[in-house]
Image (cartoon, rainbow, N blue to C red):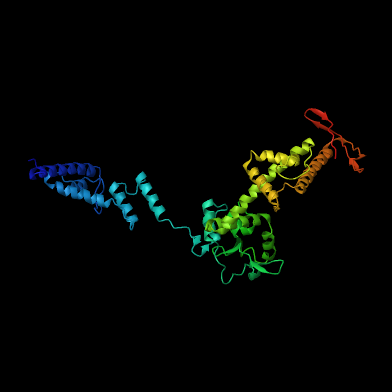
Length: 410
């Protein structure tokens, strides 16, 4: 029966082959200048190489131990990375030279031990430590999440020894109530006031409150009584304040406020698209002088007029308009009145009046720019025996094709 295990001579033979292979590898490693950490000899010294290299076959096991020591020395420890990096430098024989390995390890050591940004603390962000005029998206996000730091217990006096006006930290409403100006923050680093939303969102320094230096003690506290209300009412500040609060809601949590704001935004976009379709139909009928209404205003009736008829036709191919028209038709069948649907005769009249106003403004602008124009007034009674006046206004207009005389009736 054949053995299932190696004999003693075969084991000794294989161990001898492994030791010989290890000796060859050790000879290649130490011949290029590697040495053990802690030796005082130079990397390329022949005596050091001879000391670390044993070529005798009987000492092959000691060479294997040397290789294991070298491998252990090459492992970098997280607790003492600086000393380990220096050890690797010595092992590679580069010392303080500007080799690629030296530069890479040095950069890694600097990046690992680089001091973190001190702008952001558990108590908030000291906005005076932000040195860049324009912040990146990640910096804006981190600043909003950290929030501003709290006011100090006492404010310093300015350069003219004027006491800090604490009353500017609050604002009086028209109903007599006082609210805190939460956008006005303090920086302990600069000993200055900043506008928090304008500082993180403004790309240019529109005011000292949004600059890198802030409203410091060198400028003086006396002018704050006039400048704070002026800055608070500016359009740029209001837009930045809204952006700050909206970003704060989206970053902190996904609560009911965020969901409500998303619903309001989607509803606003839906109504805007519906109004675009309604105005297009009104302009289509007005350009061609067609009647809008019929004898009824019910959706689906054959006598509901051109306006509702075209809206029904478009709803067959437009899912958004189809949903709106179906909702109006169901409310009419049930006898309920929707709060608003913009398909009634009153809404049509309002849209027509708004379009007519813009048409008149355009005609007047062309008359003012024309070189010659005339005005003709005419009146004629209609079927109700009421005089209807018209105002034809021919004018001379020069364009690329030559002189034209357009006529407008108002």
